[in-house]
Length: 464
Image (cartoon, rainbow, N blue to C red; front, side):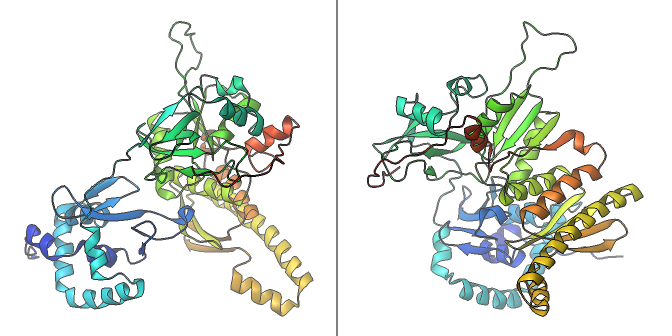
């Protein structure tokens, strides 16, 4: 008969165990980013899985903020939510983790001292983090106003978006004029909201063509774009003219990288029963999960990935697809390559997966031929091996294939398109639609055959 493990005094444990020590013990891939005053696992937002900050909580203890879920708590909450959440009895598991930590404290402390030394994260800096009060709310320090005429000119002349589109029920009052509390200048702005509709930031754009930062885009200080999106207005059901067997309301969700692209896409395509959501140029796994939640909560029938037609846009598609299809899992990613696993449950799925492999081999061959043409064969082989310049396929189990893919547009685009064909019914739910140019706003400009040029002399940068 197994003996019941001794119970730890949790209140005492929270006094004795430093939360940052425990955090890095359990998440050794995170490191301190001084610029963000937070712990991250990658400096580049598109490769970041999450961001943690440490503060003094409302309970007076050392607390953390998980920026992915916007949850916060003390040591016990951290263990429950981020270490043992998958276990049947989380509270027994929390106790076990505290026991294990105290039992191995001497070794853990030795390892952490090396980590802190390498990161130049001294005790004074760690203590200062816990002097901050909990403040996970975005505080708007400014006011919105109707658009000025020069801002309307920016929309119709520079963006080439018609006033009809700007004033369409989908986009009416989405674009606003904004004056920051500390700034005498007006800028054009979009609200950034989380999936519950709460404003978590503002993106502002300088629309004065007389300054050299014309068209520059910035987030207002404190904006939480890691959990925020740009939204079109919702499509309401016409209760007066409701027709039998006629679908109404927002049925199709289009994902773009900016609200400009959303408006341009709508102006060119006029999709029915459509609403738009913008990533504001950033999406990682946690944000893709929020997008999935929003898609399911609003009960959309279809999602169309209309991100930019470049490597970054295809990479965003891969992340979103992996959040929407449980059988697709991203194991690893960086600037050079991705490792992606597919769970396959029948012979037909494996046959379709082989299409991905064969398509990758075609791209591999082009890469190898090019390198062989420009350098000696031995050097070409060395580069391919060192730089992971071609794809690799591994069978990890009877039901799992792992693709190790160079992080470039051709591989990602092929992977995304073929993956949607593998799983039954998915291609009826998820669609990929790409612009001809880099993005939908560029397509709109070309369609209107009016390339924007501004040869006016530039003034000193206007602070926005």
